[in-house]
Image (cartoon, rainbow, N blue to C red; front, side, top):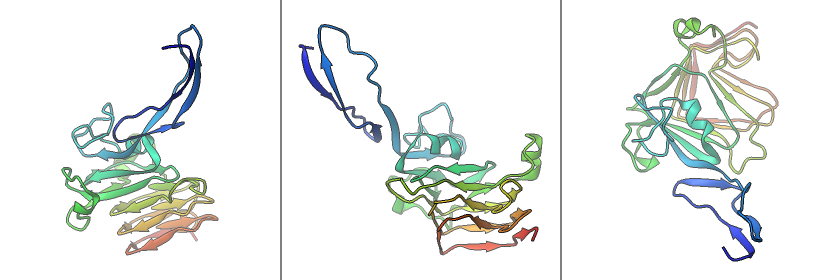
Length: 219
């Protein structure tokens, strides 16, 4: 490069970069220390995927919903193929999760969450082996500063058992979170405090076309 001032703008299909640009000055030296962090606009999850893959397509899908959330940009989406997933997840602010995919769709509108059930399940035997006998199945973090609201759409959420925090065995909405919860069945969850199915603390979720069934709480 010729000495002078430049603007660096990284670009890769399907990714969002932070910061989007950097201003640099070149003056008879190599340019170092100007890093960008990239995150996916859409991350993919399917049974049989591999968490060592980048999650940028169905062919490169991850096997874990949580691992896909980690590499998704705020305002981005996670597409999850129909399967039974034994994991508890924490949804960072601004990420939208969609279930009900077969694993070959190119548009979100092609999914069918009724015919292709996507389940997060807290099987006590599986989690007991791991020494994780209690926990919220889904935790929504503060999304008040995110570019979009968090969302969970097209999932079955079952067999969560909340103890700390003691509310929301199925879904726990943290303070200042305002997730949209749509097209979900939330069943067979328990909390030692309140809200066996859904527990909210200083939060304002919007719940539509969803049902909570067979939930229990300590009081």
